[in-house]
Length: 158
Image (tube, rainbow, N blue to C red; front, side, top):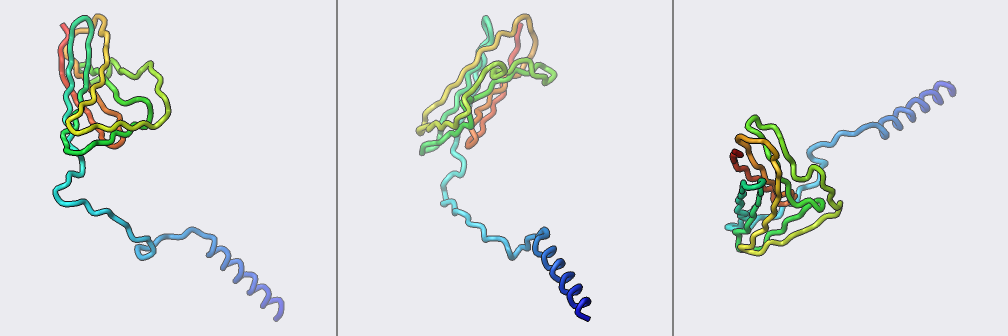
């Protein structure tokens, strides 16, 4: 009788430990309530950033991305590294033929840039197409984590 009681107690303890240490699922009632910050009426969630991409073809191809803050307040642009932008050139088939950052190195530090109302940030890149000719698409991207911008422009090389 004592042996059976000890065996039953041991099995019960082992089962209790296994249940206590096992995986748990969360129920909908056990989750913490979500706190949301109300957005005031008539206030834009995303500031109005106007973008243009200029492509100039002469003894090479010059690309210039212009990002203008069209809101009434400052806009904070956060970048995860020293790379603030990227330029790509795609051929008529959509294949990448040039990437501005390909052989460049960037710092691994976060950086922030504030754009005042009506202020414009301009970044430029230059590509030497060599003997290539035909139709291409220039792609410019702002690598900001807070405001992602991409602009495309088609152009032709003689």
